[in-house]
Image (cartoon, rainbow, N blue to C red; front, side):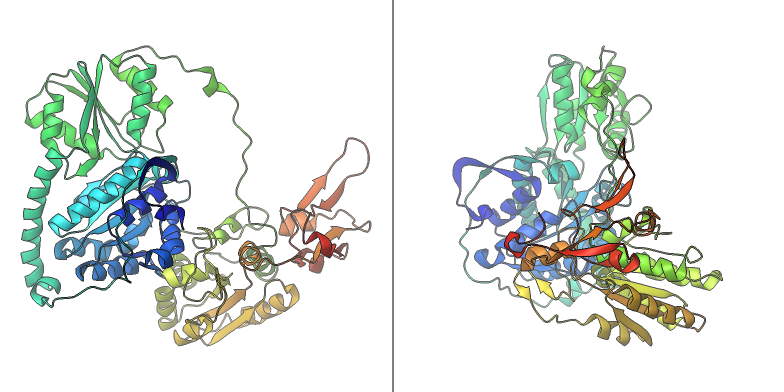
Length: 628
């Protein structure tokens, strides 16, 4: 039995925040789940996928977030409790559906988990998606701990059922990826696979303008009732006492608790912790502000709560000083922590605070992320640079291959979002008299690259698109996509053929190579370059499986590693052109410098041996079963 399907008991289980959300959804009767993986939300869909057969629920890795939301919406409209999950920028992709789904509503509970990423741990921006809830007009809950994440998932389902509209559960990286004790409640019976019923009602479900106007008014009426719900919610509560106050939400509440304790302010500071944050509970805020002289709003990213607190104080004529974002107070960029909150409270309330010694230790050396040893993307980049050099413009995309930005590869010149490499390559090709070579991964191509390719073909954009096909969605944890040939169950024939899709878009010049065959790859690239003066898009599919995924799924036994022999003249091309992490440059205190290959890291891909005669294979002892 999967650990998240254990029966309820008094004993708590240590769960990730994401796992707690899964458990809450299961306890709430969710039977239909769809998502596109994106850190920090990926474990939600992954855990559902693992337990789906046993739990008799439907789970799919959708091609993108918009599709996942639309799929889940259809299930919820058919009376099946549903959930979709995404990272913060994923809601940008799904926003078209999200904004109107708030009008249309649902018939069964539907939770939209949106995982924000303060400090950009694995993202291209730091947007605050709380404003999406406000703009769409959907209720929003914000947990601070895994325990709250489970409880608020249940509450989100209940609110969604009651008001027949989706409910947003907004998390942040520290909530998604922290572990905490979670009490397990009862699970409903598994039953059979989810089946629903759909009642035709086009003048409420087909949003033409006349329908949209009616639904807009209905949404405003729901928001009025939700406002009253927020004012009474036990998810908003006050702790402490005193003439000073703090208003906070989400994981910031934990930093506030630490700060109040460490500064000895338990008898001087009241804290309002908000868990139901949209509609914003104005009456709760107003009652909290009464009798206080100073109130600090502690929240990450934008002043979402602060702006409302200031308005409430002004409208109520309350003589209270409100602080929040600003110099020496709460920063607007990046994550908060207990130290930042203590400094802000010290400055705002005028209490002494001495930074402990632990925060003055030297920083650890930086360890930038790197493509793995044997990664086929590295081989592709090496060959492309050999043929196109520094003169070409290299738009790139979101995935492992984005790490090609780092030396020595330096194969990334522009990136803004998923799928942008294809469309921006077209724009560059129309205004620049330079070769343009764009990179996109196989999963990202299905997510957001198809429309850009169709646009490029229809307008005769002149560039080379390299589709880096490693057979999985590697960066977020090896999730499947429509053209996957290697799954946790083994090799299967994909239902969607990447070459057929690209040809179907109208691409005439298409080639497929194995990038680990360096000379063949460079010959094909040279041929494609010679045709780039002609109108139209050329596409190269660089196809080789992710070695980590292949080893994990098939338990592939490695037969060889490579070594640098005595003929090496220290030209350093292996370091300066390929830069595989398995290479080691040694400069001993006594003796000659040398280059060696760390056998524990070498994947046996042979790319380095194809570029240097001093690198030779060494067969591994079969009895040892791989690298030692």
